[in-house]
Length: 345
Image (tube, rainbow, N blue to C red):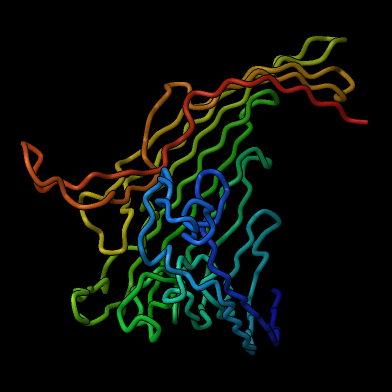
């Protein structure tokens, strides 16, 4: 049996100098006084991009913010080697992420500070080997309790007197779940793996009242964006020895995950469906194990999925799709095939 106890004192100082500058597609600052034709009474040239007025009207004056945060983060754990192949453990740790300033601000109104984030993390699990170490089974259960979770929020800006979208803090939230990892070698040439992750997330307290034309929102009880509940991974690798030459290796893997929401309000139109990807490889390794040649393919089925969805502009006003929002989002890479050569000195 092993007992562990410790602590860390943290002091973090951060400084943020905000300088708002926008550029057009030619790399020129978006400032009407920049263009020569404007100075002589001409029109402002077309920018080729849509830019909100609040983004253009920078005065480009520097805003400097400085602050120092301090924290003590303890840690404690217990582990027990029950047998030579069975290991049990339980741990607690407190995590700390210092506050800061929104360094992706598009204007002065959103260049706001945010507070530190803390988390109390608990985990319990086991690590085991079976059948003369040909089968390994590891499992961990976890619970994380967050205070002032750093995330995208609508915060009141004293600069504009309105709510703005910026980086801020959700007062409280939690995540919980488990991870199962298994690997097996039924024969000397065959390796198998199967992993499962289950995760639930929830904002326990995260809302804001209405202000002027900005409506109230309430994310309390909602899931974190971008977090699937279930994730699975399975793989199989097989090796065929060739005496005096080396070995041919081939195998494949599959990844699968359930759907999730792209936004914090968990709107159905921003939900991403379940995904699965199939990968495979074939390779050759020389007898001295110094050279590796591998031909691999990712996303063999050329599956197409969005990873996020966000609205573009306002809803369509007329026609059969009236009231519908146009959406955009990042996409996964298509089928990718590559050849790799490796050498060890």
